[in-house]
Image (cartoon, rainbow, N blue to C red; front, top):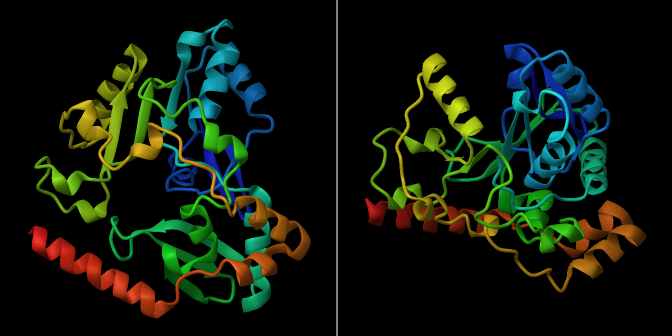
Length: 287
């Protein structure tokens, strides 16, 4: 059994998956805190049946699950996989963001891709699909919600003092984007399809990796821990809370989503285009 995060309209929830279709819904980034209601009871039920369980989540969630079940029956059947986490935004802001989009475009949001690869993996973009067939495609800098996330304005207060941002990991396996891979001579394939860094932290984690090798066509290249953390420093040390954060949330409380949209705008398309050109020129020079 696998427990992972799934976007259900305007909320990310942890659900149980038992088949490939349900696993697929768990793939992809979700820049949002997930709801774990009822998950502990379901994990306990599966472990009591002597079933193997894989739980995937943020480091704080994984630490809580591990601590809760460490002294309980069939703990050896519980596998935990954490993501390299940058922090989680407020669920309330995302709900209001979806409401704002649906009112603006007069249609329900049916799919929200936090990390579309339409322009490649290294160029973070979003794609929003509406029930009426309309699609919106933007870079992260053009999106209000993702700009707030990138500037650390919308994160939970605990994320600025996270005790899990260090090299000592809490899960059996750690997975994340391999930012900085272009600086290393480790692969020949098109990395714009996406490349992940995988840290094996325990014997259980090694068993999971061995199993993945048996059942999937997985390309693996061993690298040093230092190289694994290239451009992933937010996973190793905390960043300061922005001085604007308090005012950001005060504005949200009094003027709602419309207020912070006016006061904390995203990039316009001209600036975004100039950024893309600069990125392209820089990449070409490296080649």
